[in-house]
Image 1 (cartoon, rainbow, N blue to C red):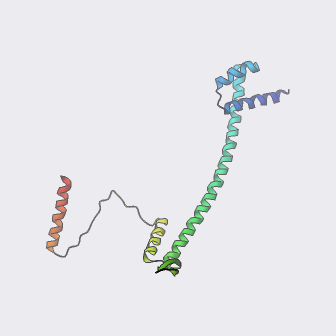
Image 2: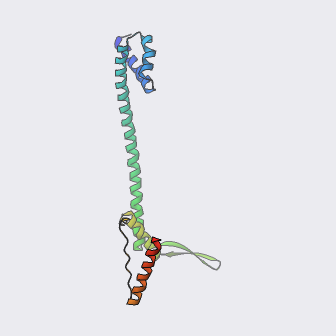
Image 3: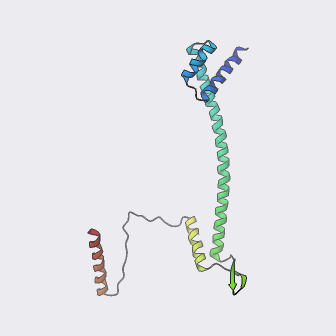
Length: 173
């Protein structure tokens, strides 16, 4: 057998062993007597085998990254489409361009009536749109909350002050 071919076969075999979890000591113990070579030769073979394993790993990682990128791109396209479609549907509800079928029961008769979104449905659609667009600011929980109490006269003001003082005393005890 040609010396180069034999050399490549040895390195390929060692690469397979390294990929399957063999340690340097395992390889030396197995292949030094089998091939009749010195420790230095096995170390050289292992160095080339590690390079081969690293090259194979890079190729595998490139394939995995490519597949991952394809999957992410497909999911992003689907997600974006569905988000845009959702936003369009919500806008149609807000503007009243959508008609719903509502089932109405009169006595024993059941009929379907076309109707437009109610005020509650419009408000809910607006709320969802604002949430999608991240229009709501997060509340700063570290800031004290300020409540303004409007009173009509001095008597009400004193009553409110007593209630506040009572609340402070209750929380302190």
